[in-house]
Length: 516
Length: 109
Image 1 (cartoon, chains in turn blue, yellow):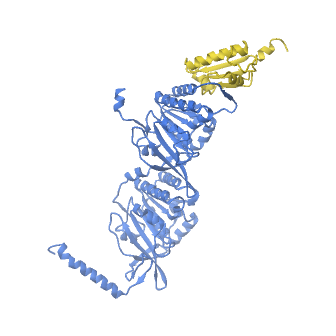
Image 2 (spheres, each protein chain N blue to C red):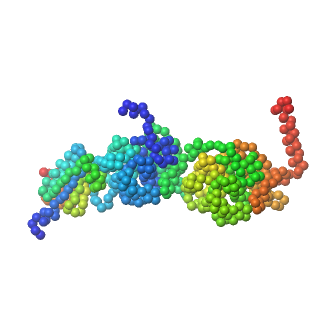
Image 3 (tube, rainbow over the protein chains, first blue to last red):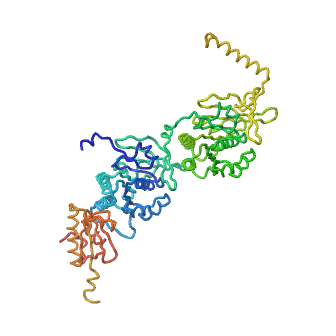
């Protein structure tokens, strides 16, 4: 016992990898953790997943249910790919079914305790040699008995009993409000050593799930809310933003953008694990830039993934054909995968998980997303930023080159919500702009930013024809392109400005470089 | 109806689940014995099960609370939980009509 005082609380890797990251290693071992949340916040899924992940790791578990019957849980969890009945047969899982039996009428006549329940849990733990126990849910115990004071006392006894059995336990509890008291009966959070909160908040007409570790007695964890999602065949997946950013590497290998001229403007191509944002009004050539980028990858023997949220598959293929690129052949060769979907089909957290799964499975070297702006309105601004951070760090971590597009609201100049919110997250920014000149719309292109590299500062004219993008000369006699108000300047004025600029540099030279 | 058949039909089969030999266990057993003696007049079989020794039986019967008294026969199946100190509730729960109706003096000997 003496040594226990000196030893820090050990953590149990839950096997839910994303949770282990925010919990800094897992749940405190041989302790009880309360999972509190409103109806539909994912408590039962979490409780079952905690056991499922353990069983996958050779750690048997016991599920104590006070609410749904064991049969219902077995059926409900099939969609997550968890075959509880099989695990029961294999002796890896045991149920303690404490759900109310509607066929039996019970009368209370005097004082009682929950000794039988504790004996059953103990029996089940011994039977399968369980190291993990889930109890779902504490609130349902209160509704089974009229004597609330007794229930309170007994819940403490059960929590103590679980610790005495040496198991790591997850106890769920209901709360009535996503931002109210921790749990309905006001005692649940004192029963357990640790408290985690699941939220399912309605924001801007969409549901946003988050998980927060409120307290871990005696050990460290990440603070604040983390978005999570619940997916079929996977269960709860937490999106641990801060952990993702830490693990980024940086490459100095250059790859082609798929266009020689653009490569030159970028100082020799994109960096391999960089993310480029292509921003411009509708029709300026964003999808073309993406198409070239994918073609460049395929030509180079790199697998490419296109996530298209604006155009249908057929449209994309037709457009690419128009520029002289054959998407269908690239797909047949296994060099390209095109994923087309309506952005509103699921929440941003779900999109992130889906995209991560596709990337993990297809293992592309290049990923293009056209366009981010289409995803902007799926969730809140915060969720959008988290999505971009999550995706950016994920593809960087896998040393994938990324290209995102953003649509600006106004035809001439201006920026987009996407651009102003995520420009700091991307490594390079390419601006595509319409330039009005003498009654004609020309297209201009500039490399605004290129992290870790020199680049062309000019705004160059480009044309689109079969064969793709042809970059031409800079708009030397025009100013105000980026601002959206192009103005012609006479060649003599331009000459004068540049001459003065050159002179100024020459005048400074003897001071800065002595001896020359 | 043959003599004795009525007796067979009205025989009470009771099981009392308890946790160990706690004071509450003793109280429940004492209360039950008294009620049975007063009201059932020998027409009963009683089994006492300690859930600490037989947890699987508690599991099979899905028992949470102790003490729990289960009446298997005569039907319907009934459960009474608690230390059985409230005689009226016990009789209500077991659906026993008091042999000598004396609701005003439930604890009288």
